[in-house]
Length: 335
Image 1 (cartoon, one colour):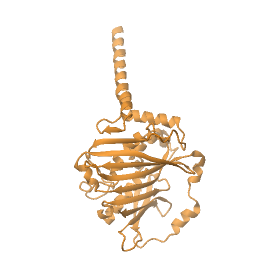
Image 2: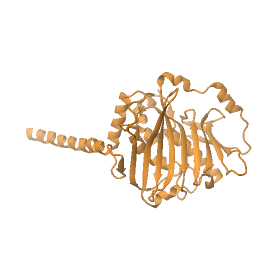
Image 3: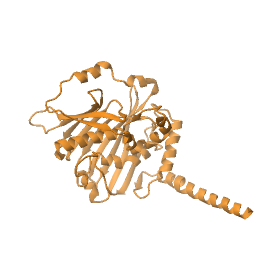
Image 4: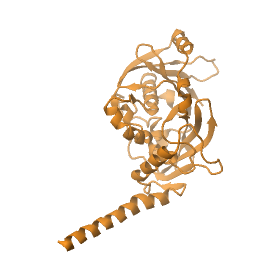
């Protein structure tokens, strides 16, 4: 009996040492370097442990450390195995081009690693996506032709009345070292003391409602599934930690900005054709009110006013069903 117990204890000790070595020590060593191989990324368990640690030890809306050391990660030898359409009912989704937002989805794990980087100066918890600027220099399908590189980097921090904003650049580079896709996310670390100021004043919302509808306005009504908030990979730790509260209805389900952004672009592509978003193109977006799921929204898009010498541009928005408040407004322009 004593020998059996000793054998079990020894086996458990060996397994514990192995797990600590693989999931903690090796992941810690990997994250000390700025360039990683796609086949050798740190375990999710260790990244989530770092996320929890930063969440507990740092307060939202406060800057920590100095700007002397940059926060950046690069993953080389990535490959495009498969990708789905950004619209669930998009026709011929198997043969369509790669959606504009798909590289951002690929950067999800890398972005979470950046938010827990030792040189990242904000708390990774509670970051609010407020703006985004996306550019394509070449067709995204170029990434399917061979190994490519993903990169995430902090561009800078800007203190505001609501807290601190951070600009993060995501990019995808082809095997020929040419930038194919680039997106700059502006995230807000909200100071709880000023959280009440974030709501838009009434006169601003009323002015949006009173604006006349453009002649070329096209509107599409969509249902927002409750699973929409499970599709943003870099916000997964927040969702896991808030799961008990959500199950008991203490906090609402909020759709991630990536879902709103990709759905708007998918609807524009379906109704206006792929030429509207064919590279080179620039898409800017501003995220306003949070979108609670499940529910209904109205996606509207129209030709932007311009002169004959300018290429055709489109404006778009996602608003509450029935003409309520706007959740997202944006513009598509040819480069």
